[in-house]
Length: 458
Image (spheres, one colour):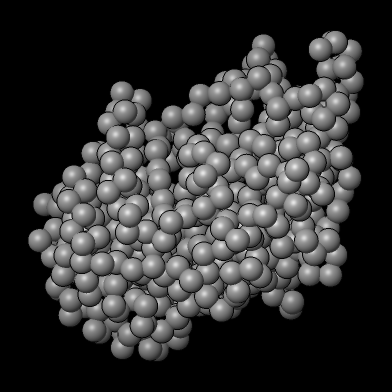
């Protein structure tokens, strides 16, 4: 590539163009998952939409592989690529909450902690994940489930519109009235269709929640799982709780005699009336009873961020997931086998309930297909030491292979590594053909392919 072409591109940016010889290159190319080590040719840190348009045009005209980085949280590390261009949105952190309309407009470099900080003063929240450092863009485009899902739906069910730079460099808005097919595809179809520059979400009146973890010793795990599978699907939609196998963190507020011990637990979030919270939790506290009960009233952002200190950027991650319709006795036995053999302090398995409000949206109403699923499961091998990479990866794969026959067949795209085209098609099922046709319309050359890719229809 001619040096004057690069110089012209650099001059066109209000932001920063970083290349391998530049100071700060190694820091700039890092993503959340420390297992990812890719070396892009260029990183364009975009300051505004004009920068994004320039970057897309540069990539298209110079045949550059393109990765789009929002929060950089994606487990598969799809926010960075080798030998291509990273369009880095991480400096685009503007947010505007509208308490009268109960909406919030969010630029695509934001994290969910940024959103919580902007909405909490107005007593509002947007349904998102369970870690505040997660990027808004990646989580949203894949679907988005978390503490408020049973009551208020997936993140995409609260997405009112998105502004997008397309593969040809044009700028469009996608909502229910404008570019409706693109709006449909972006609600679960990942980063296949363009560079989302901002999102507008519906927010809900959530301020204080009654929430936190309860932990039980492993000899109670089968009993708790069998109780949980019946209880949570019949519980009021204001009540959410994800089941986990985990090792107790070695520090306060956990009792010293439990530090490092493998246990099972449920992390709860009740977003209903605080006057009813004790009544709702009375039958829950009779199960076991739990060895640890840290459930009580707290600000919603405190719940969203309480796992953050355990999961800083740079850890080694390998995760695999599935949607689940039923937790059979046979599946519970296998969970007990592998969940009691966590390969490292931070490795874990979570089962997230996604029934309730998400199931009132048709499976063809958005790209997200698994509307009938009751749970989304993730098996995550996590460790700070690169020397343990193979160990945590093998455990996660073996655990997943044992449980996959008991799954609904497809996966949540945000819990997928690079698993091949068959897994992508299994995730979108009957929606895949329509997605590939929309891809052909908006990105006919598959410029945006560093993702869980949907090639354009032929």
